[in-house]
Amino acid sequence: MRASSRFAPSPTGPLHLGSLVTALASWLDARANGQYWYLRIEDLDPPREEPGASDLIMQQLKAHGLKWDVWSGSDARSGALFQSNRHDAYVAALEQLIAQGQAYPCTCSRKKLQYAIDSGKTTHNPDGEIIYPGYCRPAQPEGLSAPQAALIFRQQDRDGCAWRFRSPSGDDFVIRRADGLWAYHLAVVVDDGYQGITHVLRGDDLLHAAPRHQVLREALGLPPIAVQHVPVVKNDQGEKLSKQTKAPPLRTDSQEVIRLQLEFAWSHLEFQMPRGWIARVSGSWKRLQQQPIRAYPPAL
Image (cartoon, rainbow, N blue to C red; front, side, top):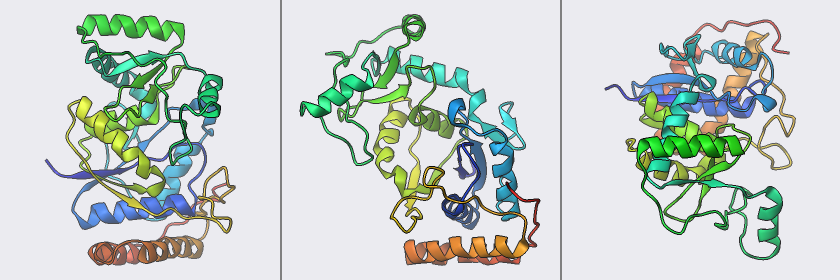
């Protein structure tokens, strides 16, 4: 089977220079290694999504020459996989974990978790998330049949409970939120397995998620993945470029601006990535530079 990679943005707004750096790094790495490069739209949080953002993201990638390989499944649109079509797959994965005694319902509120911090019972992890103090964690894992697991999931789903993964390290994290929305950790692992992803190159803001994804893959019987991280782009205040830090969107209305944006992204990679990696992908970068640039109407 041919190796494959993916770029997986959330449609909470347009791509910005930080997004372009990650997309370019992932695309160059895949092309240099003869891998498929898929686009996955992580549209699992409707309250935070921006209307039209998915189509805009696709336009921005095309304008910068970052064309993805077509994913032709029934859950695809424009050759990209949309996670909003994958609910049944996530349910099946959660029921499997429940049956194995590796997922349990959690009724803890944010107030209760904050109290655990205030009383010294737990701390924050490097990402600022409260390390779960184990209030709802069962004393012993309980093996169940598939029908029993499905019944328990449906009951707790009606009761509005969150679901946590029982991690061997004690870092029990949410895989389905109390509002019924799927957590990033479960969805990304399930879909990487579904698409046969073998290599992932993503921002180092997800560095601390790697152990979680590894233990989830093992629990679900999925093969390991080679993961590499790219230092994210930060603003003058040392903050990661994002919608929250008011990063301006990538422009697609000028060939010259598109070229400058690509050159900025490449310069960041040249400065931040290992020399061997730069040497390996430089041929793909040169070929990208030689492609004609197509400008689109203004992104916003």
